Image (cartoon, rainbow, N blue to C red; front, side):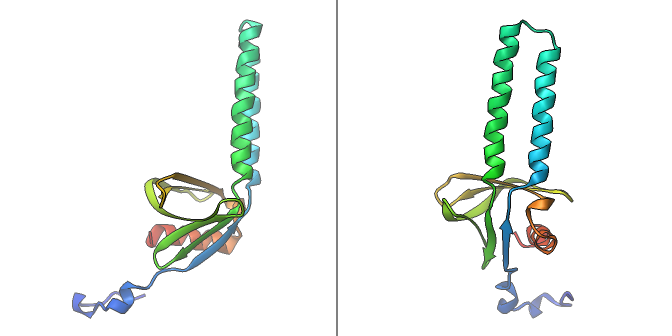
Amino acid sequence: MTIPACRNNFSAANFERSARLQCSVVPSRLLAAILLGIGLQSLALVWLSRLWWPVSLLASALVIAICWVEWRRIRAGCGVLSTRERRWFWRTETAGEREFAFEGELVLWFWLIVINGRDTKDRRLRLVFARDSLGRDHWRRLQMALRYSR
C-alpha cells in the first residue's frame, strides 16, 4: 500500500474501506491445560503449607470452585468474531450476536489475544483466545485487524 504524497488526494471512498473478518472460535486446549496446572499447583501449595486441616479443606474447596468457574468460561468461549463496516460483533449459539466497542486494554501476544469491550447494552465483554482457538490464517488476520483497524 502506498501513502499519498498529498493529503488532498485522500478520498471518501478510501475512508469507508475496512477489513471484513469472520473467525470461528473453538475452546482452547492450551488455556485449559494452563488452568489445570495452576489449579494443581494451588492445591499442592495449600496442602504442603501445613495449615490446620479445616483451613486447608476450606482453601481447597475455594481453589476448586474458582477453577470450575474458569473452566466453564474457557469451554463457553466458542462462537464467531466478525467485523462489518468498522464495527465488531461476537456471536454465540446461546446469546446470539452482540455488537461491541473496545474498552480498556487489548492484549496482543504471539500466543494470546485478550479483548475487553462493552456491548450496546453496556454489558462487559471479555474475549480470551489462545493460538489454538482459531485456524492459522484466521489468527493472523485477527491480529492484523486488531492492530490496524480498531
